[in-house]
Length: 171
Ligand code: AR6
View 1 (cartoon, rainbow, N blue to C red):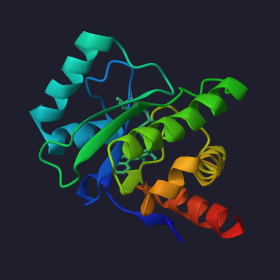
View 2: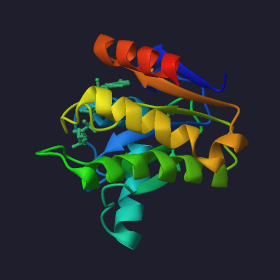
View 3: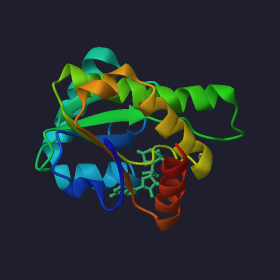
View 4: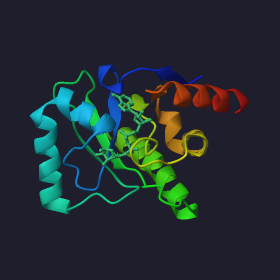
């Protein structure tokens, strides 16, 4: 099985790419974004600033790639999840794009291992069960998955961890 679920801190992973649940500014924030920038150091922020200067903000659903700075991973892929607000199909599609665009960037950079956090399920308040279903459905149906050796879903909170285990069992 290429897909794995773990409960851990994503900043500690020795994978080719870790994915960051960023915001449109790409300049850092709280949650997993804060943890990645804190541990990864200023190199990541500098790379994000360069991207901002050349291509502007990162829209929800899109992804960009930078160095991982002081982290053990090679790259950080920053993607911007949707803010749930009142939800809707467009929010679901945007979340799905976060996973497919991140996976595409990873493959374009010859990554074989990637770790995803539970994008949008923290500060952006996307319902966890729906988000897990979208994440798993998107990656399992993405042709880019065939290029990967391992794809990890790194859950931080116990509830997400249990939800992912359950959803993966029935898929
Ligand atoms: N490792 C893995 N997962 C983590 C970690 C960690 N170290 N820390 C938190 N999580 P969030 P969002 C989980 O809020 O909802 C930021 O301010 C957390 O339990 O980080 O996409 C950005 O700048 C949750 O399940 O991201 C944006 O403004 C998941 O990561 C905004 O938050 C996502 O929670 C993005 O909100």
